[in-house]
Amino acid sequence: MAEPVDRPTDEPLNRWGRWNAPKYLKRGSGPHDLRLAAGSAVLGLVVAAGAVLAAGPWDSGQRKAERDRAAVLQRAGGAHHEGAGPDGPEPAPSAPAVLSALGATGGLTAPAGASGLEAALAPLLDSPALGSVRAAVVVDAATGKQLFAQGAATPMTPASTVKIATTAAALSALGPAHRIATTVRLSPDSRTLTLVGGGDPTLDQAALRSLAAGTARSLREGGTGSVRLTYDTSRYSGPALHPIGPNENIAPVSALMADEGRLDKSDRGPAPRTDDPAGDAARVFADLLGDAGAATPSAPVPGRAAAGSRTVATHLSEPLSALVERALTNSDNDIAEALARQTAIKAGEPASFAGSRRAVTARLKALGLPLAGARLADGSGLDRADKVTAGLLARLLALAAGPDHPELRPVLSGLPVAGFSGTLGDRYTATSPATGLIRAKTGTLTGVNSLAGTTVDAQGRLLAFAFLASGTTNRGEAEAALDALGAALTKGTR
Image 1: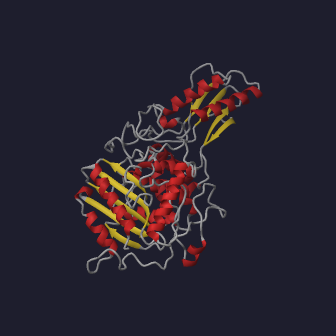
Image 2: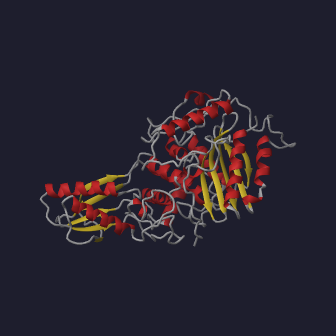
Image 3: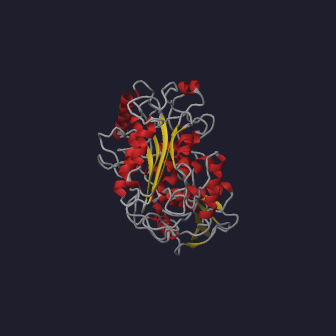
Protein backbone atom coordinates (compact mmCIF):
# COMPACT_ATOMS: atom_id res chain seq x y z
CA MET A 1 0.00 0.00 0.00
CA ALA A 2 1.30 3.41 -0.89
CA GLU A 3 2.19 5.95 1.74
CA PRO A 4 -0.15 8.94 1.96
CA VAL A 5 0.98 11.89 -0.08
CA ASP A 6 1.85 15.13 1.61
CA ARG A 7 -0.84 17.82 1.62
CA PRO A 8 -1.01 19.55 -0.70
CA THR A 9 0.09 17.34 -3.57
CA ASP A 10 0.54 19.26 -6.81
CA GLU A 11 -2.07 21.83 -5.78
CA PRO A 12 -2.32 24.47 -8.54
CA LEU A 13 -1.17 27.93 -7.61
CA ASN A 14 -0.22 31.10 -9.40
CA ARG A 15 2.36 33.51 -8.06
CA TRP A 16 0.80 36.48 -9.92
CA GLY A 17 -2.77 36.31 -8.60
CA ARG A 18 -4.33 32.88 -8.29
CA TRP A 19 -5.45 31.59 -11.67
CA ASN A 20 -9.13 30.74 -11.55
CA ALA A 21 -9.69 28.35 -14.43
CA PRO A 22 -13.22 27.81 -15.73
CA LYS A 23 -14.94 24.52 -15.08
CA TYR A 24 -13.49 23.12 -18.26
CA LEU A 25 -10.21 24.43 -19.55
CA LYS A 26 -10.53 26.34 -22.80
CA ARG A 27 -8.08 28.26 -24.88
CA GLY A 28 -8.14 31.99 -25.50
CA SER A 29 -10.62 32.86 -22.79
CA GLY A 30 -9.44 36.21 -21.48
CA PRO A 31 -6.73 38.76 -20.76
CA HIS A 32 -4.72 36.20 -18.82
CA ASP A 33 -4.45 34.11 -21.95
CA LEU A 34 -3.32 37.11 -23.95
CA ARG A 35 -0.68 37.87 -21.37
CA LEU A 36 0.62 34.33 -21.57
CA ALA A 37 0.62 34.26 -25.35
CA ALA A 38 2.32 37.64 -25.58
CA GLY A 39 4.81 36.77 -22.86
CA SER A 40 5.76 33.54 -24.53
CA ALA A 41 6.16 35.28 -27.90
CA VAL A 42 8.42 38.01 -26.49
CA LEU A 43 10.56 35.55 -24.60
CA GLY A 44 10.79 33.38 -27.70
CA LEU A 45 11.98 36.28 -29.85
CA VAL A 46 14.62 37.15 -27.30
CA VAL A 47 16.04 33.66 -26.93
CA ALA A 48 15.48 32.36 -30.45
CA ALA A 49 16.68 35.46 -32.37
CA GLY A 50 14.79 34.81 -35.54
CA ALA A 51 13.86 31.15 -35.03
CA VAL A 52 10.18 30.35 -35.09
CA LEU A 53 8.71 29.91 -31.61
CA ALA A 54 5.72 27.59 -31.74
CA ALA A 55 3.06 29.12 -29.50
CA GLY A 56 -0.03 27.08 -28.75
CA PRO A 57 -3.07 27.79 -26.64
CA TRP A 58 -2.93 29.55 -23.30
CA ASP A 59 -1.50 26.60 -21.43
CA SER A 60 0.88 25.09 -23.89
CA GLY A 61 3.54 25.44 -26.48
CA GLN A 62 2.26 23.16 -29.19
CA ARG A 63 5.58 22.78 -30.94
CA LYS A 64 5.87 19.86 -33.28
CA ALA A 65 8.84 17.94 -34.62
CA GLU A 66 9.17 17.56 -38.36
CA ARG A 67 9.31 14.40 -40.42
CA ASP A 68 11.96 16.15 -42.38
CA ARG A 69 13.31 19.64 -42.80
CA ALA A 70 10.89 20.64 -45.57
CA ALA A 71 7.85 19.47 -43.62
CA VAL A 72 8.83 21.60 -40.66
CA LEU A 73 9.04 24.76 -42.70
CA GLN A 74 5.61 24.19 -44.23
CA ARG A 75 3.53 23.26 -41.17
CA ALA A 76 1.80 25.60 -38.76
CA GLY A 77 -0.94 25.46 -36.19
CA GLY A 78 -1.76 24.57 -32.61
CA ALA A 79 -3.89 22.27 -30.54
CA HIS A 80 -7.46 21.52 -31.46
CA HIS A 81 -10.10 19.43 -29.78
CA GLU A 82 -12.15 18.38 -32.76
CA GLY A 83 -10.66 14.96 -33.38
CA ALA A 84 -7.72 13.12 -34.86
CA GLY A 85 -8.84 12.53 -38.44
CA PRO A 86 -7.36 13.83 -41.69
CA ASP A 87 -8.77 17.29 -40.93
CA GLY A 88 -7.28 17.32 -37.44
CA PRO A 89 -4.71 19.75 -36.07
CA GLU A 90 -1.64 20.57 -38.07
CA PRO A 91 1.71 20.54 -36.28
CA ALA A 92 3.11 23.93 -35.27
CA PRO A 93 6.50 24.81 -36.70
CA SER A 94 9.68 23.61 -35.05
CA ALA A 95 12.92 25.51 -35.29
CA PRO A 96 14.87 25.02 -38.52
CA ALA A 97 17.15 22.00 -38.45
CA VAL A 98 20.11 24.09 -39.60
CA LEU A 99 20.65 25.38 -36.07
CA SER A 100 23.81 24.22 -34.36
CA ALA A 101 23.67 21.14 -32.16
CA LEU A 102 23.41 21.49 -28.42
CA GLY A 103 26.98 20.28 -28.05
CA ALA A 104 28.33 22.96 -30.38
CA THR A 105 30.50 25.78 -29.16
CA GLY A 106 28.72 28.59 -27.43
CA GLY A 107 28.32 30.33 -24.14
CA LEU A 108 28.82 27.19 -22.04
CA THR A 109 32.38 26.00 -21.63
CA ALA A 110 32.43 22.21 -21.54
CA PRO A 111 35.21 19.99 -20.22
CA ALA A 112 37.10 17.97 -22.79
CA GLY A 113 34.84 15.28 -24.24
CA ALA A 114 31.67 16.73 -22.72
CA SER A 115 28.84 18.53 -24.46
CA GLY A 116 27.66 21.94 -23.38
CA LEU A 117 24.41 20.40 -22.18
CA GLU A 118 26.26 17.86 -20.09
CA ALA A 119 28.37 20.61 -18.59
CA ALA A 120 25.22 22.51 -17.66
CA LEU A 121 23.17 19.62 -16.25
CA ALA A 122 25.67 17.28 -14.61
CA PRO A 123 26.59 19.63 -11.72
CA LEU A 124 22.91 20.39 -11.08
CA LEU A 125 22.09 16.68 -10.95
CA ASP A 126 24.72 16.26 -8.25
CA SER A 127 22.68 18.44 -5.89
CA PRO A 128 22.04 16.64 -2.57
CA ALA A 129 18.50 18.06 -2.72
CA LEU A 130 17.70 15.47 -5.40
CA GLY A 131 18.04 12.59 -2.97
CA SER A 132 19.78 9.27 -3.34
CA VAL A 133 18.67 8.32 -6.86
CA ARG A 134 18.10 10.65 -9.76
CA ALA A 135 17.57 10.22 -13.51
CA ALA A 136 17.43 12.67 -16.39
CA VAL A 137 16.80 12.50 -20.13
CA VAL A 138 16.64 15.29 -22.69
CA VAL A 139 15.43 14.67 -26.25
CA ASP A 140 15.39 16.99 -29.25
CA ALA A 141 11.72 16.82 -30.17
CA ALA A 142 12.41 17.73 -33.80
CA THR A 143 14.90 14.96 -34.52
CA GLY A 144 14.16 12.45 -31.78
CA LYS A 145 17.83 12.50 -30.84
CA GLN A 146 18.67 11.86 -27.19
CA LEU A 147 20.86 14.79 -26.18
CA PHE A 148 21.52 13.93 -22.56
CA ALA A 149 20.93 10.92 -20.35
CA GLN A 150 21.72 9.90 -16.82
CA GLY A 151 19.97 6.80 -15.52
CA ALA A 152 17.69 6.88 -18.56
CA ALA A 153 16.63 3.24 -18.19
CA THR A 154 16.36 3.19 -14.39
CA PRO A 155 12.77 2.42 -13.29
CA MET A 156 11.72 5.00 -10.70
CA THR A 157 8.57 6.08 -8.91
CA PRO A 158 7.20 8.91 -11.07
CA ALA A 159 4.48 10.30 -8.78
CA SER A 160 2.05 12.45 -10.81
CA THR A 161 4.23 12.57 -13.92
CA VAL A 162 2.73 9.16 -14.69
CA LYS A 163 -0.37 11.12 -15.73
CA ILE A 164 1.52 11.90 -18.95
CA ALA A 165 1.43 8.19 -19.78
CA THR A 166 -2.19 7.78 -18.64
CA THR A 167 -3.53 10.67 -20.71
CA ALA A 168 -1.51 9.74 -23.79
CA ALA A 169 -2.87 6.20 -23.68
CA ALA A 170 -6.45 7.46 -23.37
CA LEU A 171 -6.05 9.87 -26.28
CA SER A 172 -4.47 7.17 -28.41
CA ALA A 173 -7.24 4.70 -27.62
CA LEU A 174 -10.28 6.97 -27.79
CA GLY A 175 -9.29 10.13 -29.66
CA PRO A 176 -9.50 13.73 -28.44
CA ALA A 177 -13.18 14.15 -29.41
CA HIS A 178 -14.46 11.25 -27.29
CA ARG A 179 -17.06 12.15 -24.65
CA ILE A 180 -18.17 10.11 -21.65
CA ALA A 181 -21.94 9.57 -21.43
CA THR A 182 -24.10 9.51 -18.31
CA THR A 183 -27.59 8.26 -19.07
CA VAL A 184 -31.01 7.76 -17.51
CA ARG A 185 -32.91 4.66 -18.63
CA LEU A 186 -36.56 3.68 -18.17
CA SER A 187 -37.55 0.03 -17.75
CA PRO A 188 -39.87 -1.60 -20.28
CA ASP A 189 -42.75 -1.53 -17.77
CA SER A 190 -42.13 2.21 -17.14
CA ARG A 191 -41.86 1.63 -13.41
CA THR A 192 -38.11 1.99 -12.81
CA LEU A 193 -35.66 4.71 -13.73
CA THR A 194 -31.94 3.96 -13.59
CA LEU A 195 -29.20 6.57 -13.47
CA VAL A 196 -26.33 4.85 -15.30
CA GLY A 197 -22.80 6.06 -14.60
CA GLY A 198 -20.46 6.10 -17.57
CA GLY A 199 -17.34 7.10 -15.66
CA ASP A 200 -17.44 10.89 -15.94
CA PRO A 201 -15.86 12.30 -12.77
CA THR A 202 -16.63 15.87 -13.88
CA LEU A 203 -20.39 15.33 -13.70
CA ASP A 204 -21.75 18.19 -11.60
CA GLN A 205 -25.04 19.47 -10.24
CA ALA A 206 -25.76 21.45 -13.40
CA ALA A 207 -25.40 18.27 -15.46
CA LEU A 208 -27.60 16.34 -13.05
CA ARG A 209 -30.21 19.10 -13.20
CA SER A 210 -30.22 18.89 -17.00
CA LEU A 211 -30.59 15.11 -16.83
CA ALA A 212 -33.46 15.46 -14.36
CA ALA A 213 -35.26 18.01 -16.53
CA GLY A 214 -34.91 15.83 -19.61
CA THR A 215 -36.08 12.77 -17.69
CA ALA A 216 -39.12 14.53 -16.22
CA ARG A 217 -40.09 15.83 -19.65
CA SER A 218 -39.85 12.35 -21.17
CA LEU A 219 -41.97 10.88 -18.38
CA ARG A 220 -44.66 13.51 -18.87
CA GLU A 221 -44.72 13.02 -22.62
CA GLY A 222 -45.07 9.27 -22.15
CA GLY A 223 -47.77 9.58 -19.53
CA THR A 224 -45.62 7.69 -17.05
CA GLY A 225 -46.74 7.72 -13.45
CA SER A 226 -44.71 7.23 -10.31
CA VAL A 227 -41.37 5.48 -10.75
CA ARG A 228 -38.69 4.11 -8.44
CA LEU A 229 -35.09 5.21 -8.89
CA THR A 230 -31.99 3.03 -9.00
CA TYR A 231 -28.40 3.81 -9.91
CA ASP A 232 -25.97 1.65 -11.89
CA THR A 233 -22.19 1.67 -11.35
CA SER A 234 -21.48 -1.61 -13.12
CA ARG A 235 -19.32 -0.03 -15.83
CA TYR A 236 -16.41 -0.19 -13.37
CA SER A 237 -15.23 -3.30 -11.56
CA GLY A 238 -12.67 -4.24 -8.93
CA PRO A 239 -11.95 -2.30 -5.73
CA ALA A 240 -13.18 1.27 -5.63
CA LEU A 241 -10.72 2.35 -2.97
CA HIS A 242 -7.30 3.39 -4.24
CA PRO A 243 -4.39 1.43 -2.70
CA ILE A 244 -3.33 4.63 -0.94
CA GLY A 245 -6.46 4.26 1.20
CA PRO A 246 -9.01 6.94 2.13
CA ASN A 247 -7.37 10.18 1.16
CA GLU A 248 -8.26 13.79 0.43
CA ASN A 249 -6.40 13.56 -2.88
CA ILE A 250 -8.84 11.09 -4.46
CA ALA A 251 -12.39 9.81 -3.99
CA PRO A 252 -13.36 6.14 -4.23
CA VAL A 253 -13.19 5.32 -7.93
CA SER A 254 -16.76 4.95 -9.20
CA ALA A 255 -18.48 5.02 -12.59
CA LEU A 256 -20.98 7.45 -11.05
CA MET A 257 -19.94 10.49 -9.05
CA ALA A 258 -20.63 14.20 -8.93
CA ASP A 259 -17.98 16.86 -8.44
CA GLU A 260 -15.35 14.15 -7.92
CA GLY A 261 -16.98 13.29 -4.61
CA ARG A 262 -15.79 16.57 -3.09
CA LEU A 263 -17.57 17.73 0.04
CA ASP A 264 -16.57 21.38 -0.30
CA LYS A 265 -16.87 23.94 -3.08
CA SER A 266 -13.44 23.21 -4.58
CA ASP A 267 -12.80 21.86 -8.07
CA ARG A 268 -9.08 21.02 -7.72
CA GLY A 269 -6.48 20.09 -5.14
CA PRO A 270 -6.99 18.17 -1.90
CA ALA A 271 -10.48 18.19 -0.41
CA PRO A 272 -12.61 16.13 1.98
CA ARG A 273 -14.25 13.31 0.01
CA THR A 274 -17.41 11.26 0.36
CA ASP A 275 -17.09 7.52 0.89
CA ASP A 276 -20.18 6.94 -1.27
CA PRO A 277 -19.85 9.04 -4.44
CA ALA A 278 -22.45 7.06 -6.43
CA GLY A 279 -25.10 7.16 -3.72
CA ASP A 280 -24.55 10.86 -3.14
CA ALA A 281 -24.89 11.62 -6.86
CA ALA A 282 -28.09 9.54 -7.09
CA ARG A 283 -29.65 11.30 -4.12
CA VAL A 284 -28.91 14.71 -5.62
CA PHE A 285 -30.44 13.50 -8.88
CA ALA A 286 -33.56 12.31 -7.04
CA ASP A 287 -34.01 15.72 -5.43
CA LEU A 288 -33.61 17.42 -8.81
CA LEU A 289 -36.15 15.04 -10.34
CA GLY A 290 -38.61 16.17 -7.70
CA ASP A 291 -37.89 19.81 -8.49
CA ALA A 292 -38.61 19.00 -12.15
CA GLY A 293 -41.97 17.48 -11.27
CA ALA A 294 -41.11 13.78 -11.25
CA ALA A 295 -40.71 12.91 -7.60
CA THR A 296 -39.85 9.32 -6.71
CA PRO A 297 -41.65 7.65 -3.78
CA SER A 298 -38.50 6.29 -2.14
CA ALA A 299 -34.76 6.91 -1.89
CA PRO A 300 -32.62 5.62 -4.77
CA VAL A 301 -30.99 2.21 -4.41
CA PRO A 302 -28.22 0.44 -6.35
CA GLY A 303 -29.36 -1.62 -9.32
CA ARG A 304 -28.71 -2.30 -12.98
CA ALA A 305 -30.92 -1.07 -15.77
CA ALA A 306 -33.36 -3.78 -16.79
CA ALA A 307 -32.93 -5.53 -20.14
CA GLY A 308 -34.82 -3.63 -22.80
CA SER A 309 -34.69 -0.31 -20.95
CA ARG A 310 -34.71 2.77 -23.15
CA THR A 311 -32.63 5.90 -22.72
CA VAL A 312 -34.70 8.95 -21.76
CA ALA A 313 -31.90 11.44 -21.01
CA THR A 314 -28.17 11.72 -21.73
CA HIS A 315 -25.38 14.01 -20.59
CA LEU A 316 -22.02 14.04 -22.39
CA SER A 317 -18.81 15.14 -20.75
CA GLU A 318 -16.49 17.71 -22.25
CA PRO A 319 -14.29 16.21 -25.01
CA LEU A 320 -11.49 13.95 -23.86
CA SER A 321 -8.97 16.59 -24.91
CA ALA A 322 -10.41 19.00 -22.32
CA LEU A 323 -10.45 16.30 -19.63
CA VAL A 324 -6.80 15.53 -20.38
CA GLU A 325 -5.85 19.20 -20.11
CA ARG A 326 -7.67 19.56 -16.82
CA ALA A 327 -6.11 16.37 -15.43
CA LEU A 328 -2.60 17.56 -16.28
CA THR A 329 -2.88 21.24 -15.42
CA ASN A 330 -4.52 20.61 -12.04
CA SER A 331 -2.88 17.22 -11.43
CA ASP A 332 -6.39 15.83 -11.04
CA ASN A 333 -6.21 12.29 -9.68
CA ASP A 334 -9.91 11.49 -10.11
CA ILE A 335 -9.89 12.36 -13.81
CA ALA A 336 -6.65 10.45 -14.35
CA GLU A 337 -8.10 7.27 -12.86
CA ALA A 338 -11.25 7.71 -14.95
CA LEU A 339 -9.19 8.07 -18.13
CA ALA A 340 -7.27 4.89 -17.32
CA ARG A 341 -10.56 3.03 -16.97
CA GLN A 342 -11.94 4.46 -20.19
CA THR A 343 -8.81 3.10 -21.89
CA ALA A 344 -9.47 -0.30 -20.32
CA ILE A 345 -13.07 -0.34 -21.53
CA LYS A 346 -11.95 0.46 -25.06
CA ALA A 347 -9.46 -2.41 -24.91
CA GLY A 348 -12.07 -4.87 -23.66
CA GLU A 349 -10.39 -5.09 -20.27
CA PRO A 350 -12.19 -4.84 -16.92
CA ALA A 351 -12.45 -1.21 -15.82
CA SER A 352 -10.37 -1.83 -12.69
CA PHE A 353 -6.87 -0.97 -11.50
CA ALA A 354 -5.53 -4.22 -12.97
CA GLY A 355 -7.43 -3.90 -16.25
CA SER A 356 -6.37 -0.29 -16.63
CA ARG A 357 -2.74 -1.23 -16.05
CA ARG A 358 -2.85 -3.80 -18.84
CA ALA A 359 -4.71 -1.53 -21.24
CA VAL A 360 -2.51 1.54 -20.72
CA THR A 361 0.66 -0.54 -21.00
CA ALA A 362 -0.55 -2.17 -24.21
CA ARG A 363 -1.46 1.18 -25.74
CA LEU A 364 1.96 2.67 -24.94
CA LYS A 365 3.63 -0.41 -26.38
CA ALA A 366 1.64 0.05 -29.59
CA LEU A 367 3.03 3.58 -29.79
CA GLY A 368 6.53 2.11 -29.88
CA LEU A 369 7.66 3.53 -26.54
CA PRO A 370 10.43 2.00 -24.37
CA LEU A 371 8.58 0.10 -21.62
CA ALA A 372 11.40 -1.94 -20.07
CA GLY A 373 10.99 -1.78 -16.30
CA ALA A 374 7.68 0.12 -16.49
CA ARG A 375 4.78 -0.77 -14.19
CA LEU A 376 1.69 1.40 -14.36
CA ALA A 377 -0.06 0.38 -11.16
CA ASP A 378 -2.59 3.24 -11.33
CA GLY A 379 -3.51 6.17 -13.54
CA SER A 380 -2.81 9.00 -11.12
CA GLY A 381 0.66 8.32 -9.75
CA LEU A 382 -0.49 8.09 -6.14
CA ASP A 383 0.66 4.48 -5.94
CA ARG A 384 4.34 3.97 -5.12
CA ALA A 385 4.20 0.71 -7.07
CA ASP A 386 4.24 2.82 -10.26
CA LYS A 387 7.57 2.59 -12.05
CA VAL A 388 8.64 4.36 -15.23
CA THR A 389 11.93 5.50 -16.68
CA ALA A 390 12.97 9.03 -17.53
CA GLY A 391 13.55 7.73 -21.05
CA LEU A 392 9.91 6.65 -21.38
CA LEU A 393 8.52 10.01 -20.27
CA ALA A 394 10.86 12.07 -22.45
CA ARG A 395 10.19 9.89 -25.51
CA LEU A 396 6.45 10.10 -24.93
CA LEU A 397 6.55 13.90 -24.76
CA ALA A 398 8.64 14.04 -27.94
CA LEU A 399 6.11 11.74 -29.64
CA ALA A 400 3.26 14.05 -28.61
CA ALA A 401 5.15 16.95 -30.20
CA GLY A 402 5.71 15.18 -33.51
CA PRO A 403 3.62 15.07 -36.67
CA ASP A 404 2.74 11.37 -36.56
CA HIS A 405 0.35 11.48 -33.59
CA PRO A 406 -1.65 14.73 -33.55
CA GLU A 407 -4.20 13.03 -31.30
CA LEU A 408 -1.65 13.28 -28.48
CA ARG A 409 -1.28 17.05 -28.58
CA PRO A 410 -3.59 17.73 -25.62
CA VAL A 411 -0.84 16.11 -23.54
CA LEU A 412 1.28 19.15 -24.37
CA SER A 413 -1.50 21.71 -24.16
CA GLY A 414 -2.39 20.44 -20.70
CA LEU A 415 1.07 20.84 -19.23
CA PRO A 416 1.27 23.62 -16.62
CA VAL A 417 3.19 26.72 -17.76
CA ALA A 418 6.10 27.89 -15.62
CA GLY A 419 5.11 30.90 -13.55
CA PHE A 420 1.61 31.06 -15.02
CA SER A 421 -0.68 28.09 -14.48
CA GLY A 422 -1.49 24.92 -12.64
CA THR A 423 1.11 23.22 -10.50
CA LEU A 424 3.92 25.38 -11.93
CA GLY A 425 2.15 28.64 -11.13
CA ASP A 426 4.45 29.42 -8.20
CA ARG A 427 7.55 27.55 -9.28
CA TYR A 428 9.28 30.27 -11.35
CA THR A 429 9.68 34.00 -10.72
CA ALA A 430 8.72 36.84 -13.03
CA THR A 431 12.40 37.42 -13.80
CA SER A 432 13.36 33.80 -14.46
CA PRO A 433 14.43 33.15 -18.07
CA ALA A 434 12.41 29.93 -17.94
CA THR A 435 9.10 31.59 -17.05
CA GLY A 436 6.60 30.99 -19.85
CA LEU A 437 8.99 28.72 -21.72
CA ILE A 438 8.79 25.58 -19.62
CA ARG A 439 5.63 23.49 -19.81
CA ALA A 440 5.87 20.54 -17.46
CA LYS A 441 4.03 18.06 -15.26
CA THR A 442 5.10 18.00 -11.65
CA GLY A 443 5.15 14.99 -9.36
CA THR A 444 5.26 14.85 -5.57
CA LEU A 445 5.09 12.04 -3.04
CA THR A 446 6.92 11.85 0.25
CA GLY A 447 10.57 11.38 -0.77
CA VAL A 448 9.78 11.56 -4.49
CA ASN A 449 9.91 14.61 -6.76
CA SER A 450 9.75 14.78 -10.53
CA LEU A 451 9.39 17.18 -13.43
CA ALA A 452 8.74 16.22 -17.06
CA GLY A 453 7.76 18.41 -19.97
CA THR A 454 9.01 20.60 -22.78
CA THR A 455 10.93 23.83 -23.17
CA VAL A 456 12.55 25.94 -25.86
CA ASP A 457 16.31 26.46 -25.78
CA ALA A 458 18.30 29.50 -26.88
CA GLN A 459 18.42 28.21 -30.46
CA GLY A 460 14.65 27.93 -30.62
CA ARG A 461 14.50 24.14 -30.45
CA LEU A 462 11.79 22.29 -28.60
CA LEU A 463 13.29 19.93 -26.03
CA ALA A 464 11.42 17.15 -24.23
CA PHE A 465 12.80 16.30 -20.81
CA ALA A 466 12.19 14.18 -17.75
CA PHE A 467 13.88 14.59 -14.37
CA LEU A 468 13.10 12.03 -11.63
CA ALA A 469 14.40 12.05 -8.06
CA SER A 470 13.89 9.60 -5.19
CA GLY A 471 15.04 9.67 -1.59
CA THR A 472 14.51 13.42 -1.30
CA THR A 473 14.16 14.83 2.20
CA ASN A 474 13.02 18.42 1.59
CA ARG A 475 10.23 19.05 -0.90
CA GLY A 476 11.00 22.75 -1.42
CA GLU A 477 14.71 22.15 -2.00
CA ALA A 478 14.01 19.26 -4.36
CA GLU A 479 11.58 21.33 -6.41
CA ALA A 480 14.08 24.19 -6.60
CA ALA A 481 16.75 21.77 -7.84
CA LEU A 482 14.40 20.38 -10.51
CA ASP A 483 13.43 23.90 -11.58
CA ALA A 484 17.10 24.79 -11.94
CA LEU A 485 17.55 21.83 -14.29
CA GLY A 486 14.64 23.02 -16.42
CA ALA A 487 15.93 26.58 -16.48
CA ALA A 488 19.35 25.36 -17.60
CA LEU A 489 17.74 23.85 -20.70
CA THR A 490 16.36 27.21 -21.76
CA LYS A 491 19.85 28.69 -21.79
CA GLY A 492 21.18 26.14 -24.26
CA THR A 493 24.67 26.88 -25.55
CA ARG A 494 24.36 30.47 -26.56
